[in-house]
Image (cartoon, rainbow, N blue to C red; front, side, top):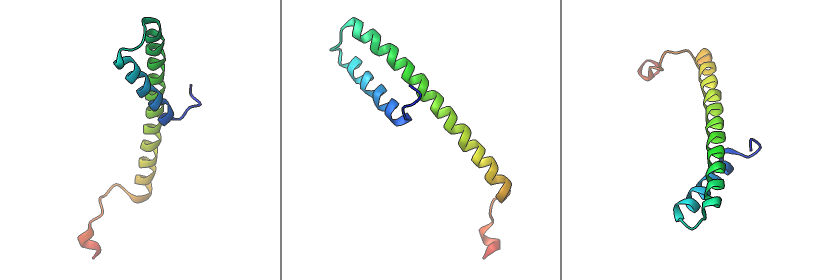
Length: 77
């Protein structure tokens, strides 16, 4: 499942939710869909956590380059 993109997994998860909410699935199919949906949610959470870590790293690196003090626009004019 990790080969899929976040967007693909989210789209698949949304489709599973729509099918389950429609009420037009049997018990066995609903159980399988629920299992797959749970796995997709976990995979999406993992991708989001990884993305947040990358963004946090970029922010830290940018602060090292630019500095942490806010830009004072009035002084630069």
